[in-house]
Image (cartoon, rainbow, N blue to C red; front, side, top):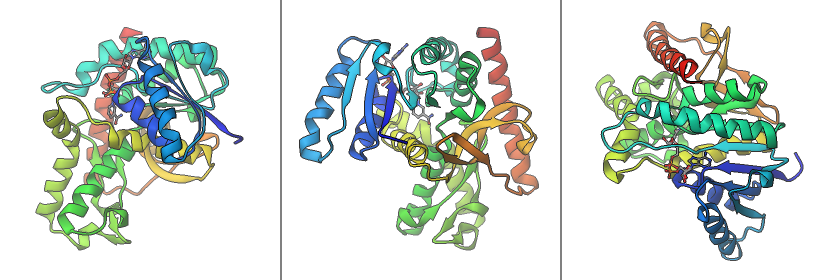
Length: 310
Ligand code: NAD
C-alpha cells in the first residue's frame, strides 16, 4: 500500500488515543472526525504539535466534514456511547445501532474502497450493523475486541507468573461479552502452554478476570478503557497496511467456519492488505466448543435485535 490514509470516526477516548498511537507508529495520514465541533480539530492539532517532539510528521486532520475522509484505505469506527458503571455493553445497542448506521452510510458515500474496523459496542452486533448497511465484501469489515481481550488475559498471566508480558501470546474466541472464551491451551509463555505452568484454579481465576476486564476498568475510571483498545486497533490496522499476514483474534464473518452460519464473531484470523484473508480453525475440545457455541448464540440474539432496529 502507498502511504495509507486512515480515518478514525469518533474523537473521544478510544478514537483520539488510536490516532495518537497510529501517528507515533507512522502508519499514514490520519483524519479524525467527530460530530462535536472543535473536538476532532483541537485534538488533531494538539497531536500534530506533538510531532516535532515525538518524531512523526504524517498529516493529522481533525474535522466534522466527511468529504475530508475521501480516499481512505482504512476507516475505524469508534463513534458511539461508552459504558458507565452498572451498564453492560448490550445496554448500548439501541443508541449505537443508529450511530453506526449513520456513520456506515457516510463510509459508503465517501470511502467506498475502505477496509472498516469497528470498535463501537456491543462489538459483534456493531460489526454486523456496519456490514449490513455498507454491503461491503465481508473481508473488508472486521471488529476489534479479541486483540484487547487476549491482551488482558496475557497481562494477567504475566502478573501471576512474574514474567515479561512480551513473551506471552494468547488467543481468545467468541463474542465481546462476559461469555468470551479465553483459551488457556493456546496461551503460551515463550512457547510453553500456561496449562504447564499454572494450576486449574489459578487459570480459572485469570479467565474470569479477563472476562470481566472491561467492567474492572469501568468501575475504576467511571468510563470505559481506551489505551489497550486503541493499541488493539492499531495492531490490526498495521497488519492490513503492511500486508503482514499477522494472526490475531478479530470479529470476522464466519459462515462454514466453526459452523457459525453467517455472523461476525471473534475467531483467529489472518490479516493482510485485503483485510481478513483467512479464518484459522482450531481443533477445540468439548468444553471449549460448548463455551464458544454459548457465546455465539448470544451474538446471534444481539444480531436479531439489530435486524429489528435497522
Ligand atoms: P467517547 O464517548 O469518549 O467517544 C465517542 C465519540 O463518538 C464522542 O466524541 C462522540 O461525539 C462521537 N460520536 C458520536 N456520534 C458520532 C457520529 N455520528 N459521528 C462521529 N462521531 C460521533 O467513547 P469511547 O470511550 O471512545 O468509546 C467509544 C466506543 O467504543 C463505545 O461504544 C465503547 O463502548 C466502545 N469500546 C469498544 C471496545 C472494544 O473492545 N471493542 C473497547 C473500548 C470501548
